[in-house]
Length: 381
Image 1 (tube, helix red, strand yellow):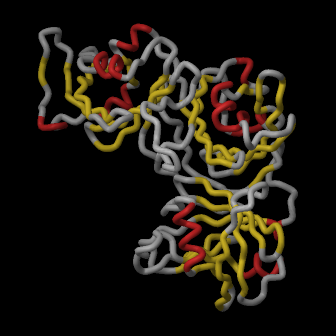
Image 2: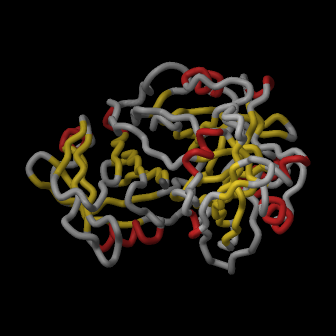
């Protein structure tokens, strides 16, 4: 049963996956993105008319290392929608070693301010510093892909990404991956090794068709771990493709929902803490606390009683949560019942949230391996 998530409100983004030499000095951006980015009063600097007649506005670009760069956003006086990042952009590009074949993604933070992510010629998110041992980085692994004709039936995952991120978890020549699409659906796509490449194959073409994707579209793929990927879709002009509704359920990679028994999984979203009432959305009950816990931003997670009864969970007990069935790590959480639903909370749940960096807005999918052993797929927002 789908979980309706309403309209998706993402921050506007612009993607340029393959920079040309000219883009290192002047980066063209779509007029609609420029209109949102333009702020007449950004950084306290107003518009100015250049001798060339082109209107220029100052915008701030936050680089991958946190340094703020002042860049000129210019738009054509002809009113044809042409816009580009000019003065200051070449210095920013040079400082980060950008060259031909690199890629960038700009995300609008607020009027006059954008953040920058940089992708190397191997299409992977560029790292400009090495975190200390045991330190978790906020930026999850990503790669960017400009769809070509040969990618429409099967798509090659960048070799560098496979080596850095999938070596330990990708052990078979055929293995299923889960793709979380912009509509919120979970698609099963088979990973297949064709030496020396790893390809997204069976289920990939239906995924593209369902989202009206073709040659020239741009995909930004983020790896959540345990063979779970989230995908953002960009139009040919580099602007983020907007989807108005979302439905959350597993598919078998070909048509419609998966044929797996309904009792084998509960799909639940993390409730924003500002909600002070219980909301029931079709098959799931989400309950938000009145205030944020000091120990964890998520203090209560509830699931509808039908799921509990179907797996034989009828009374309070301890549940074991696992994020990988191949690894030994697990978390014991308290399961309790109340009227028509059950819920998990307490120190074990808070520890699970903290150690797995579960935050407000993240999506969790619970799969009941056994009555009291649940596998959790975490999709971070």
